[in-house]
Image 1: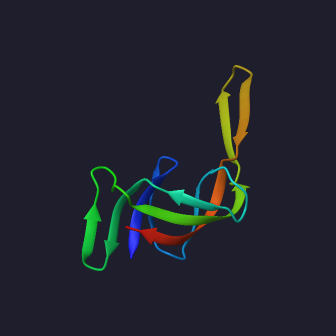
Image 2: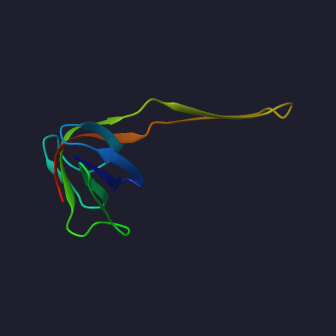
Length: 103
């Protein structure tokens, strides 16, 4: 059994017991979270597809931890102009564990 959910503007294919890094979700470690924007649920040959989401379908998950990704360097340089700009960015993420799919 698997589902396709939307969180943080991205789509993920999830199965029960899977660990996943998603865009930051507010909450403490160990807190239960419900993802209610479910696009599709498949159980063997039985496939349910929403338009755009399935009514009443949810995916339950548990927050495992919060963190920040690797640093991305942004460098702007203009030759012969004495212009240099250096900037960095670290995207925040939440690690979750999928505990169940309710179709």
